[in-house]
Length: 420
Image (cartoon, rainbow, N blue to C red; front, side, top):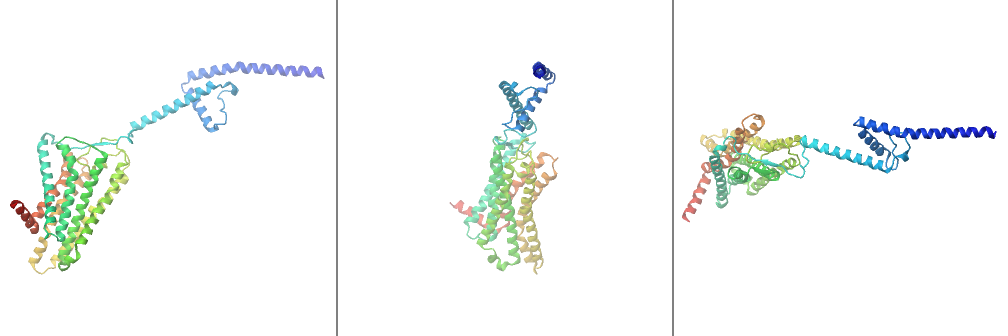
């Protein structure tokens, strides 16, 4: 038995030794084949790296990575791990760099969060050769608007006889129009006098906020003046008891608070959008209808918010003004005497002129921005400048000519100044 077992054990040992020699001889051949395949296939190193990375991520930190070639784990030395980690880091770096490059090429600047955008203001297109005359015209209009409205405020504030509701509402109108002129004046002077056309986003949004806030105040005051005319004609005996000074102050505060609250979301929403296009404005000042075209992101919320502000201010105020005058006409037509009808209508002429001067340019600007996309840039510029400059210039003139009390107070004011 011993003689038969020993030759069998010896044969098994010889076969095991031969198998180990064959495996050791196959190991360099496998490495040579893998290296030659890597040289032939450019994507082989990347596939190998991604294989190691995937197995490393799926198996976890505590599990050893399975080698991609059939040899024992002790063959994979520390240098092999270092090379694999280096290749993985290089793939990660190049991937991040390519993504940043693609984002920059597709309109999302990587420095957008750190560098605020700058807008370029424009004057009147096509009239650059006559810049001196355009500058003189703008300066004259601004001087007339500021002096005229300041004079109205001064006269109403000094004369004790001008404490009636109509005159108090007129002073509110003059104050809001003075605010519009002063809000747009700095950038207009920079463009036409100093040829400084750049403005930062924060300054531009601040100007937009004040210009539109004072415009909404203008609309609200015009509605309050229409209600004043209706009460004066419909119930003249109780006119002073209905529109007391305290109620007039409350109406003025309500108009101001409404304009501020409704305008706050618009610059806040615009400030959070990225601006990556040519930030060239169509006017020498910042308007929401112009700024909303420039962001390179979804502006659905901004558009709906702007539409809500327009409908809840200008739309509602214009509707109330129309309804007030319908009631005024109904009341006037019910009067018996012709002289009474003419006298009642004559008190509304100055307010009707103010409404026409204010709403016609505003409707023109809205229509030009809405339907005049292919129109000349000169049309947009002229309509916007008429909208901001003509009402503050004409309203003091209209009320000075059509209101006897204002004319009398102005003569008294200038006579006192000349006697001094």
